[in-house]
Image 1 (tube, rainbow, N blue to C red):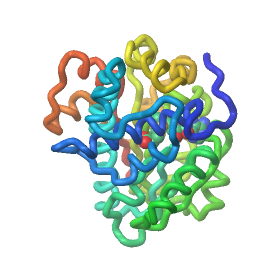
Image 2 (image 1 turned 135 degrees about the vertical axis):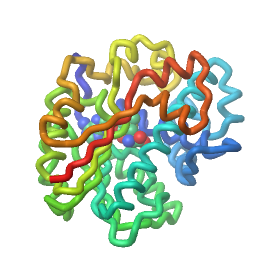
Image 3 (image 1 turned 180 degrees about the vertical axis):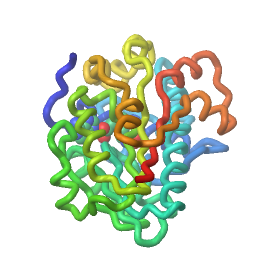
Amino acid sequence: MTSTPGEWDIVTSVGITALGVAAARAIETHREDPLVSDPYAASFVRAANPPNPMPTTPAEAAVLADHQGLWVLNSAYMAVRTRFFDEYFLRATGEGVRQVVILAAGLDSRAFRLAWPSGTTIYEVDQPKVLGFKQDVLDEQGATARGTRRTIPVDLRDNWSAALLGAGFVPGEPTAWLAEGLLPYLPPDAEQLLLDTIDKYSGPGSWLSVEQPVDMARMLDDAQVGDVATQWGVDIRSLIHDDDRPDAKDTLRSLGWEISDESAADVARRYGRNLDDELDRMFAVSRYVIGRRSQ
Ligand SMILES: C[S@@+](CC[C@H](N)C(=O)[O-])C[C@H]1O[C@@H](n2cnc3c(N)ncnc32)[C@H](O)[C@@H]1O
């Protein structure tokens, strides 16, 4: 069991993982056939100025000789993951959902990138300093959200629902929730609280989507995860909670959600991305879960 510190900013502890994801999206944006195009990702990385530089283009990644492999894998994985959850939100809002909650939003710029139907409100939940940094960069860029965007600066290990309600969230309305890149950093009781809160406040017609780790032990053993420690200066393994916990899919099914899931590797193949052995190993660590509630 790990002990994650109480608060962090964008270049420390779990905060820097959000920056690593932004760098991966920036690299993907500069590829010839990108799965996602994120015009803000590189600005976040430049503004954060992390202790060890993070690349924002394939060319910059190529000169980081020792760590090039890490960035190739990181950007390949994050591209597929981001595209999958982009499509998830477009499906949910296409079917009438107008309330969206992005848990552990980090430097997710979907509020600014996606074609949300008019009347959509997007709630972004994360640590105060992460959201503060993000806002400063977005303001500097003159970014305008494509829906109503509200930020909820909280710790998801605490009871966070009051802050969400206080920001205007309407309980019982059809809602689309997302927990992407979050569960490994939550202790089991916080994951349970998260699932219970989603369930409690979701009306009929709601959706949820979760990136679910498959094999935490394998993730902790992975050489690339170890490489992150050297490159980013933060030992991600010390932040990951690998305690036994109920399978989130079973919990959600028992609460009445209709659940489907797909391995990250299958999603990548569906998007036409070829996986060599190393990529296949990386994509094997998680599944993408979608839940729907009809009643
Ligand atoms: C790997 S990043 C993912 C960010 C974003 N979902 C994405 O995919 O770009 C993990 C994020 O989880 C947030 N996070 C982790 N534990 C949290 C907690 N207890 N409370 C609030 N945010 C948390 C971090 O601050 C960070 O922004």
